[in-house]
Image (cartoon, rainbow, N blue to C red; front, side):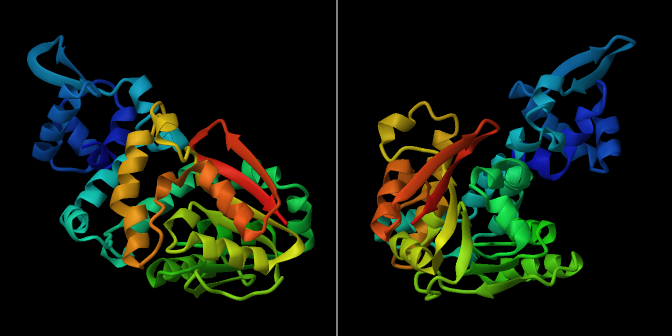
Length: 332
């Protein structure tokens, strides 16, 4: 129901309305009243929307989304919008039968069976990372802004729809950018966006990330919530190490969690992240015959694997507005 409220724009509509009846809400949102009314029933009994009677017409039911609830459910909430995260529930429910089969038979569910996953990931990443990329994330990396302005070579691993890469390519025209991803579909969207933005310094390549040889070709490599999904994160990290020049930097953004379950008990997104991991991250890796580390591989395992790949300098950062991710600044 939270996902429906987000996708249909009902939360955004109600966030701008005073207490109103279901007909008014449906009309303002451009939706069918009967469906809106039933959805409102779920929101009221879930204590998300408040119910009241019209003082001038006691038979008339009015619905109101309190401002403190709107602050966590509307698009203007930005990174605090839990409606975005709620989309994962129906999305992952779509492949529940396949996951049940994996519980019994092993293996995993490949990327191509996940309906809308890339679309939701783009929105999720846009809130958590892309919105902070230029202002908060890149400045974490020593001297990288100056180097990007002067002109360097950049590689993004698991680039998906290319939002981060296209953003950097637009703001740093003197640098050149390459995006690698296993899936063809999001790369089409990435290329189309780059064309619309008139970018000539970025291109996208469909590539199996477990084995690429680019000895010391890049000054800066990024991976936004992508490493834990890989079939062989150990091999990917080693390839990244080899692809970096001696003075190069690697920015790895991944899930902010511990490798030890007892340390995740109080994680505000712990249950959701383990759910996504079971239903997607772990499964897509196992579908490729991979390690199946899952989203909750944790900082301890991440640091261990970075060191095994050859990296000796590892710094960790967090953003106050991003409880989902941890930022690793790494170099040789």
